[in-house]
Image (cartoon, rainbow, N blue to C red; front, top):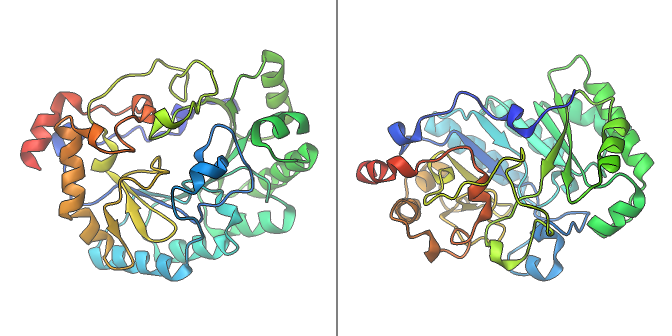
Length: 329
């Protein structure tokens, strides 16, 4: 079934203008790894030089267990944990174990992840379906091997990739696991997009998303010269303050905590779970100051937030109430 990215968004939005600051986050991004097996031109992780501007590695399972304990001690059950950020989660050798720890901990109503699909094969797919994941998004980046080499600088057996996704969808049928297969439109022709829909017609949910900029957007043209829009193709909306720090956080692979999943530069660090609990980070003065920075129209003081085109794609907009939130903060 053809869908748009907006169909996957939570429709019961919290009124941040009325309720922020919240007593606890609604969701977390937890990064299994910052490493990837592709070098996509529209992603900071795909640029070897830019990757050197941050630490890289894979998350220790002990840190996952600590996060579970932190949330239980706090008495917080999240709406969602997104198990992805800068790298491809399935590159983590113990990714399935990570999912099981979070599922057994029952600290989130849902667990989502995204992957480029290179690791999908029958034996592993069976583990993924049984792991407790609620959603797997598969990001397709081209419709043939030549296109993959051009866009991702990676040699890909396209037919094998399609078969891997097909097997995953077949195994997930009749289970609670949802599958969403999408392609990032890096300038494809109508014929190429039609081929994408034909090749993945077996998938329960299929969509085309537009490229978006990242934090520190002036670093590089992540949209590859395409006309920038929201994921759904809607016009971008300039905003003063970002709503994300008021309902979510991102835990990087090494335990440091960023404002959001778009901070590939690690410029918005506000805590470290190696030395603090997630509650201490949420209630910290460091996070409070970063929020003030946005509410007082000072986000230009931060290397990541100052020029973040992703902000213009977000559906939430707190600008009309930012001074009210500032007073409550």
